[in-house]
Image (cartoon, rainbow, N blue to C red; front, top):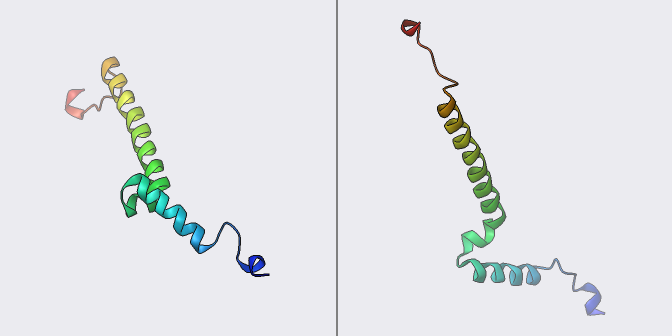
Length: 73
């Protein structure tokens, strides 16, 4: 009868065991708790940064996207 009330996989004990496994894997508490957000932020920054850098080098090589000042006309 007690097994019926013990809950499923989403109990506090199960969450603690999962958290401790992540903490052991990553080495600290902050990284274990925020790992999915860290991955998303890292891949977003690296991905968008790479695209922007590639785009800027492309514009630099082709001479496009220049800012023309009035006295240069």
